Length: 325
Image 1 (cartoon, one colour):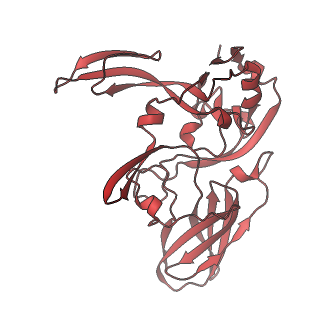
Image 2 (image 1 turned 180 degrees about the horizontal axis):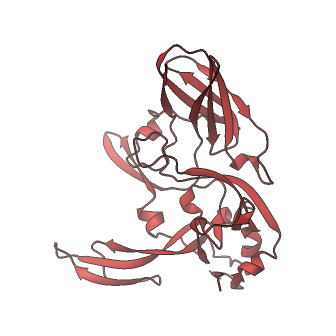
Image 3 (image 1 turned 135 degrees about the vertical axis):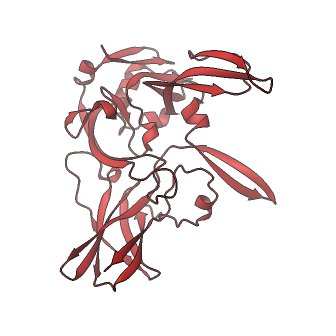
């Protein structure tokens, strides 16, 4: 029988069944879940790794509070059932943290440590106690599909997909930052900066979603054309489009609430633009989103994006090309 254990630095360890979670007050959140490697440009890692759903389950915060997090607890680790083999070069040979491994000499005389590591991601205790976080067992009103994390997954609205751990088995409270593969080595954004004439490399774990939009399709009715698209990553205040190298123009934003309950700010917003009667030939369409705090989706040459040397967290303005015959 499936259970998720809550342990580590807690006063009252818990072992929760799916049946028990379903006795808890049920909550829903509409949340657009995006892979942090999703670019929408076709130039980097992947496109189309995004979707919106109505997620249902029990709030995480009351369950952590019931377990009684101890004063020294600062970090919460979410462990999934999936695991894989990793080889780490020049390790001391010490195997810790409950992983299994074997040490072999490498060609350079160092030590290669091969381990079987369980998938895990962590966040601060303050982030974990956000009332929007769910131990989720439903998707769009039905049981969570196996591919989406059945029987229970973490849903952390506002975070990239990797942080929304699927197939949960354990929740562990620690007094230090967790530094597993998907926190400290993979899903890390690397940037190159110049400081006083010297190259400095910075490293940041992929975490919260970034403000983003994209033109999705062009439609035609009679002789007139329209553009449709979406914006997400923050509560959306407005979206603008630019045709070719022309001025930015306002779109019509659909701000109606999504189906079901939950926060509108975590679900994508759709927008439309009346293009009129464009001239025949190839055109470019670019969109940019504005959130309710006044932030603007950056251009691809924004210094913060241009310094990126990894494909994660690519939220620059997206340009589509369309041919009007």
